Image (cartoon, rainbow, N blue to C red; front, side, top):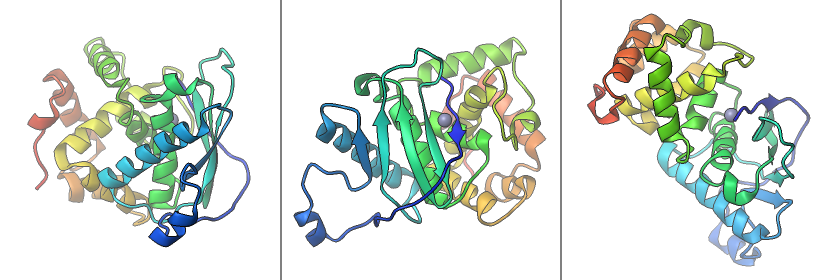
Length: 248
Ligand SMILES: [Zn+2]
């Protein structure tokens, strides 16, 4: 389940939005957004990637830029890493997946494409805790398991204070970045919706706002500690997004 963001090197260019006319000349089976390698049914997998990316754009808003990048499927290494996304500003270098397409769809594939999407949405690096949190929120296969896990971890005192998770640039041994990241992002999206959350990320990243002042303006929380109290109450009360207090 663990994934990491690798640092490597550079570029290429293809516009995110192409004219309808240009698309007529494109092979209908070629993706506009990614280039899939390592599968027999490349056309099907590229269509699935495109659908995920289009849904992300509908949910969060259009990315600032897009450069086509490879999605590479490899035979499983047998280790805990399901895949990773390598990004070197300004371009995603590659997504690598160690699962067959059928296993990755709805899970690791959606997760890694969400990392890629937000790098282009923000055109920037951003906080690892929120990065993993928003990527985990894109995994329909994992939501129920993550909700149970975060509830149990909170009930048994096996969580970390958010101040130890936010602002990290490396993974914690218990992978709380994933579990608590998922849940805190789930709570924030529940309060203001997906586009509001994406605007919050943009303000934090590109508006160079400090966390507490962005939390105050977007969510009415005075600090990360205040958010932590609200979030723990949300978990105790059953993680009902619809019951989370709206921000507007
Ligand atoms: Zn990830």
